[in-house]
Image (cartoon, rainbow, N blue to C red):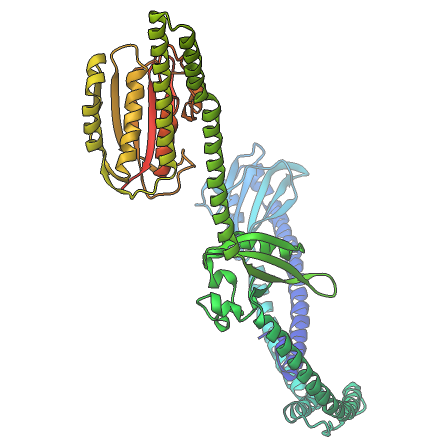
Length: 620
């Protein structure tokens, strides 16, 4: 437990004891430190004095080189138990004698040129003392003493200090235990009074004053505060009674207002919701119960991602975030993935008095029927535009292509009238009229075929493309034989289609491959399933589950790639009429048939390198 959290009695006792302990410890530590340095100085004086005596007694032994006398002098050091080593050096620095006698020479340092030098090294005191004979140096004394005597004395002092501190603290504890009651007991009594007031909420209780000190002043202030609180409570009680009545009246008015607003909101045919800044539902109107599978009471208070995780990456979240940034947002056409319906959404920021956004009001107006009607209208308009284009093309035929053979018939008829006496001319003009009539008949037949495709309501059935191709090979047997043509194909699929139209499609493509070819025609037909990657290349496909790609390839005269779209228009011919016959409707008819089967057709070619027609139709 921390000191600030302990009871005041223990806190006072702890402060007194800690103060005494610190003061006594500092005093004892100062005394021990003083004794430590004093003893070191005393020891140094004692050892140096001993060194002077030994050096003086050893001068004769060194002067006469008497090792026995020198050993006897050093042996006298046994009386000093703290002298651990000593030796005498001659003037050449060689060890003359040593103490103890069996001590290794490595224990002694080289003779120093300095004399009367003593120093502390670790746990030892060492020194050199000169040996003089008639004031002339005859050698040097080395002496070494341990510090055990000093350490023993310091341990003794430390023990005495601990005993002194312990005794002093015990006395301080008894005194503080007795004296701190004069401070703690009035404070504890005040604490007990506050506890009673807190638990019983009785502000008539008063604390008992014990003296005129600071605690007594605190007690007076506390009692005065209780008197003020008691008076204020009476005023607050009266005010609360009045406030409760006003709150009740105001609550009733707000409840009526709330019910009125809820009635209006719940009567709305639009979807209304309110979100807070974290996108939690605050409110939903009754229309939400009619649209969603989850009830309002299970949604309000929850986050939109918790209730509808699928909205996380929707455009609605982006609109909500824009509204939370203070922008009023209108989304004129939003498709709800949850309801599969279209809404016109409004996102209105809700702001407080400081103009800070605290939520968003959303209003969703269901426009599904309008969108469906618009889509149907667009389809009808597209069909109408298509019919208009067909009508324009038919008008072009009537004004141009159909008039051309009529003009020829009219011209040659007039010429026949002027050449009745010229039999050869009559036969020639008659042949021209016959050719023009045949040309006009072909144009009328192709226009009727194109018209039937545009307005066909025939039923779609399972159609085996292999059967259609085999039948066409029989139909084209004579022209294929004349041009020595070959048709090769891999097994073709069975699809849902109109057999007559698919036969016309294959027939036109084979006819073109035979017609526009100056050599032996070779026609290759293949089919394969369209992969997902290939499907992405054709955005015009209407989204059927799978598609079949049928490919017609020939070795004919080909055409420039820039005309790959023009060839599918009515009456568009890239080659001169003198070389190749035709109406220019065949490939337009092919496109009409493919589009009628919800597919697409395209062509790719180069001059004199043949052509390739790709037909993509929904698989069965």
